[in-house]
Length: 345
Image 1 (tube, rainbow, N blue to C red):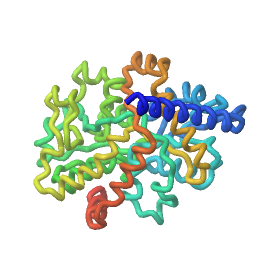
Image 2: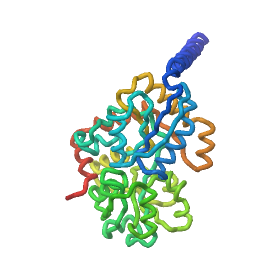
Image 3: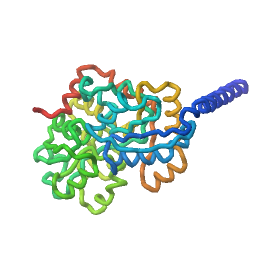
Image 4: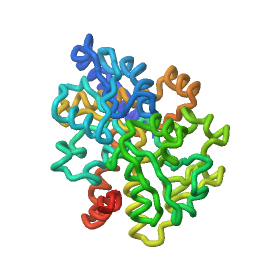
């Protein structure tokens, strides 16, 4: 037994020594450089908030301690930014993409020929947290409960048909039979919330629960909005306590549930980050380690607590494996999933 413990301790020590040595070898590359985090959404929303918090601490954990800057590149549900990172930006580990949670599934949701990049070839560093999506509406919306949306039309704001705020209500229309009408063209959740408050739309779907608690909590506390439905199969504990219904409970067939499961998988990797396919493997591994270390940084956690931001990181390896399982689903299910998030024309 003692011999086994010694072997285990030696293995751990050798592993740690190897990681330290590799970090020292990579330090000269990043030293004096700047890592750019490109956020595929407009400024001010939840994705932007998480990316900027990550950017304040990531440099401490990357070998060579580079500077980190965060800029926004919204468009086409983060696919504009993802295509830029995959095809145009430097492919050396100095550019990180921070997209909508839908982007890793773009190969399921989109035609790859039109997408101009393959999401499965990107190197995912991980995700900053899990999230839970919900639909919210003005208190005076014509449908006051989710059950009423099967008979009464609600006008919902959305970024684009390919974005979660667009295709999630479309998904419920096509799979469950709700009557949402989506108005596209809003840059992000902040603009959609403003439009809702001004009466331009009745509400929005694809709102992250973490964003609801941090950026829009006043809308809940003042009673200005209704938490209409959780866009989930399994309920979120917080929303379950509030009695918010789950859309998954309205599915009536196994096929409907499987389609919803594939689409809702994005909630598990709520804040994904990636680098280009061509980034050298050793730099990808170093960035993945730095990414996970950053989300455990005591200063970051203190800031997140102060901002009431939830941090529950997922490693790049786990995220990549999860995506591989989804993309390996039967082709007919993937095709039906793709059709379920499209407007019927």
